[in-house]
Length: 144
Image (cartoon, rainbow, N blue to C red; front, side):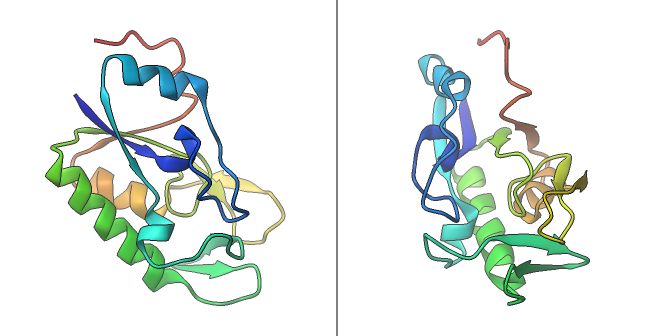
């Protein structure tokens, strides 16, 4: 089975601060699955490092106030193309991210306040029938 995975969870230094969110539980899935790494923000044309962004209303804005919605939307579309190319029915995405967040995202105030919601990529993948999980929802999962 091919599973789409936020590249930062696999140790790729693609976060806004040029770091990663390497997760050993996610990496263990490589034993039984083909993991397809994606970073929607980079695929949308944003650099690494970059100014942090959050969803504010119907836009994605940087901490300095720049509207980067178009880049986030483009990255979501590119991620969906890859998911379709590999026939991915499942994605494991980084929680709280304005692109990959699933169930929880930051509120747009850059105060580390979390609210219910999904990032732009998670929304688009869900809309296209792909099951989304964050990195904590896979813990203890039985692999096929």
